[in-house]
Amino acid sequence: MEREKSENESIAVDCGAALDIMVSAAYGDADDESMRLLREHLAECESCRAEFEKIKRLPGLVAECRVLPERDLVGSVMARVKVEAAAKRRRRIVSRCAVAASFMLCATLIFAGYKMLVGSANKQYEAPSDLYARDTGSSGILCAIGINSADDVASVRIGDGDGEFDVADREFVSRLISALSNMKSGDASDSQDGLPGNKHWGIGDGMGTGFGTESVPENPDTSLVCDPDSTTDPSDAVPPSNIFAPPAPSLKKIVITLRDGTSVEADCDADLATVTIDGTVYDASALTSEELEIIFGNTQK
Amino acid sequence: MTTDFDREAELIKKAASGDEAAFEALVRDYRDLVYSVAYQNLRNSDDAFDVSQEVFIRIYRGIGSFRGDCKFATWVYKVTMNAVRDFVRKASIRETSPLTFEGEDGRETDIPELVCPDSDEPESAALRSETVRAVRRAIDSLSFEHRQIVILRDIEGRSYDEISEMLGLELGTVKSRLNRARLAIKKYLQGDGEWNIF
Image (cartoon, rainbow over all chains, first blue to last red; front, side):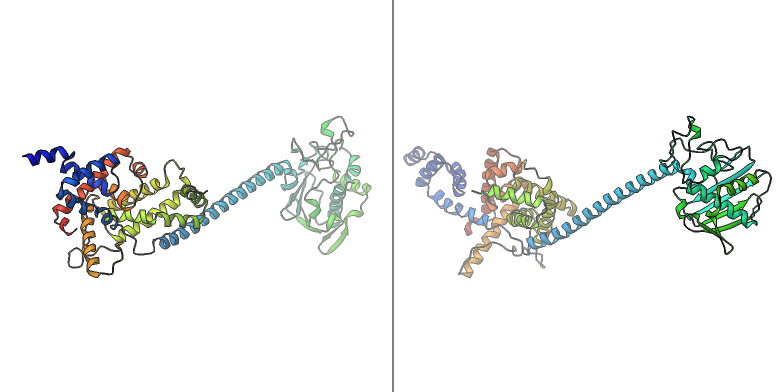
C-alpha cells in the first residue's frame, strides 16, 4: 500500500497516458512538457521502459514500408509524355492549318463575293447575249454582242425585221467586225455619232446603230466614265473608247449569228487588227468611218 | 538564393510551357510520393505503376491550369488519389480492404522492393524483413483516413502543413489522427503477436 501510494505520487501520468506520449516521442512529436512527464514515468515503470524500447523502433520500420517502383517509372512516363507532346504538336499544326484553311476559305469567299459584286457591276461585259442588246427602234436592227471572257469569244447575234444580213457575205462580216474593232479602238464614237437615228450615244440609251444597252449598272465600273463635257443629260454620257474592255483585248474569236441560225466564225488577232474567216485574212481596221457609216447605213435601209 | 519552392515554381512554369526536361525533373521529384501513395492504396506493384503513369500524364495535361492556389504537392496528391479512386472503381476494389500479396500457392508472398537497410547478416536482414511485413500488415489494417496520414507523414515524410492541406484537415486533427493511427499500428502488432519479435 505504501509502495502504491509512493508510485501514484511520483508518477504524474499512468501507463495508458504514457503510451500516447511514448508513441509521439518515438516519432519526435512530443513537446517538452510531455517528455518531462514521460521521463518521470519511465524512471519508475520498468514495463513501460521496455515497451518504449520497442516503440522507438516503430518509426524506422514504418518508414521501411516505403515501396519504390520496380520499373523505370520516370522513363515510362516521359515516353508517354513525348507521345502526348507529339500528338499535341500535331493537333496544333492541324489546328493552325484549319485556321489557315478557314482564313483562305474566308479570303476566297470574300474575294469571290467581291468578284460577284464587281462582276455584277461589269455584267454587261461578261454575259453573252445580254450585252449591248437593244433594238434602236429607229433602225429596226437588233444586235446583241456578248463577250465570254472565259473563252475569249465574242458572240454577235444579229436579227432584224428586214433580214438584210447574210453571214455568207464575207465582206459584210468583215466590215462588221471592222466596225467592232473601230468601236473598240475608239473610232466608233466619231464614226457612229452622225449616223441617222442615232441621236444619243451613251450608256443607257444605246450606242448607235444597233449597239447599245438598256442594262447598264447604276454604279458603273470606273472604265465607264461619264464625260461631263459631252452633255448635260446624264443619259448622254459618252461611252468609254474601249467599249469591250476589259475582256476584248484577249478576244480570239467572233461568232456572228443571224436570227435564222446561220453563222460565221471569225478568228481574230490582237486588237481585232485582222480577222480570218475560212482561211481568208481581212484587214479589219482598214475601214474608214465613212465605210462604216455605209455599212450601218445600208442595214437600215 | 534559390529555395526549393522557387526551383519548383520555375519547373512548373517551364513544364507548363512545354519544357519536357522541366517536367521530367518534376516527375523525379514526385515519383516516390505518387508511387507510394498509389501502392499503399492498391497493394499491387503493377497497378501502382500503371496508376502512377496515369497520374503524371494527367499532371502533364493539366499543369498549364495549375494556378498555385495550393501547394504543388497537394495538387499531385489529389490527382493521385483521384486516379487511385478511378482505378479502384474500375477494378471494383474496395479502398479500405487491406489487400495482401498472394503467391501461386495462395499464401502471402514477399513484399516487392522493400527499402531495407543494408545488412551484412542475412539472418538479421530476414528477421527485419519479416518485421517490416508485419508493420505493413498493420498499416493495411488501418482505416483509409488513418492510412493516408501514416503514408504521408511516416512513410513519405511530408510536413504537417502539407498533410493538412492535402487532406483538407485542421492541423490539430492531423496530429491527433496520426497519433491514433500510430497507436493502432502498435495495437495491431500486439494483437497479431508480432510485437514480441521487436
